[in-house]
Image (cartoon, rainbow, N blue to C red; front, top):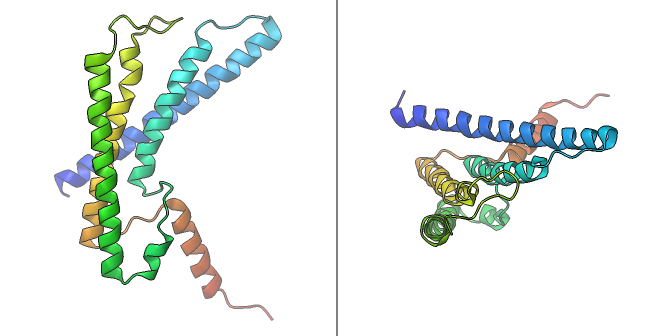
Length: 183
């Protein structure tokens, strides 16, 4: 097994586990906050703020996972009408433009977090430096660029990554055509 494949598999698991952890923690925190408010007329002072930060991190890491599965929203149905070579070239050009945008955003967000952000900006209730909250921007867009580049390389090798919904639709249509009609 190649080293790159091993790295990709471990990165897949880490991203997905972190997303699941963030989702579970912020939902549990919000649920606890609701219960405590309803039954004890008390509010966890830092609960909403931490839940918001976890939700933001979950959202950006979820976008990375979606890029891994080629499940981002984009208009691509018209590529299906092209010959396979033209479709591959068009999708590759679109993805390379997307990578260029992401890398530019990595540069801008890195510059903001490390050069332009005030070092004394802190979260109101937890006191966490906001630099750590905003770090998700360069990290997520860099990881997304890597994922898109891996998908482009796979596409050029002839390996297609269908998003989960497209896979389910394909399986259902195959199952429908394979099932004989009952009299």
